[in-house]
Image 1 (tube, rainbow, N blue to C red):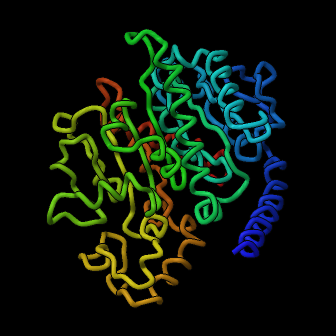
Image 2 (cartoon, one colour):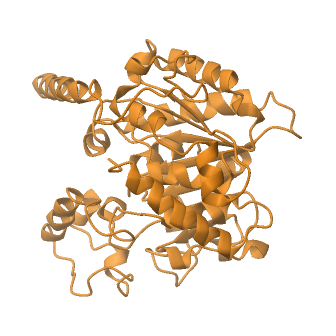
Length: 383
């Protein structure tokens, strides 16, 4: 056991060292922001060269106020994007001190919407999701994220789940604690977003669904890993007769809902109580359905009528199905939008469902969608 432990730690350290080299690089075309509303700018307390590969991508992207106005036809503000990289401070608590300092410096607590984003393993934030909420709320937003690892999500998931959950809990708790100090009448809506391992990281902040709804004004979780405990607990208690891939919980009246595609994202605001929690999960997403249990146990989702984009020819076989879904993980996002682990612009529909501005119309949704597609395409690959 001692030898095994030393070996595992050695492999982990070597892997971490390899991926730390990627973290020190910067994608072609990504440049230091000059906007003081961004971490990494000359005015920021979080230096550009400490933000890591994904942090630099995050703060360098996004439409400014003028571009938002051109896209929506409405007055807009320069959005706030706050980020702390692993090298921005010595330890997690100091990174959170820096995050709070950056939120205060940029005036984040005076915005309409504050979105806390526990990241994936490398610190990645989905640029489509980030741009979508900024478009919907005309830039009157503050987005905040922090890196906790150098490792890709699949390695973090296998070797470092506890670290991801601890990081997500710390980020949400520290920002929420500071947010509570603002006057209730004027502080922003407190939102939580997570995707992939970021769902597990964020859900780690909450022991129950009620705790999540007591904390946030809205939560959007996309592509949750199967091992996410809060998600699993809700799935297991779904209403009888509803499928695992598209469950209904408490007749939809407990504040949490599920959608397996854009068309099924809830729009019936009158019957969906606030605060809202929305899980978006494709039937064909291996991240959502992969589990060690597949090795010897047939899951509910393979007993049910296939979800809209799962092959009806897929059957469960001991051992074989586990390796089949495991293989799919390697290209989970390399599929067309709206399938697998590629959620595309469905995050826009999801944001509107969870955090819709008053008086919002379907025409505005389509105008923003067109602008979102152009903006994301012009900025290069998501990852």
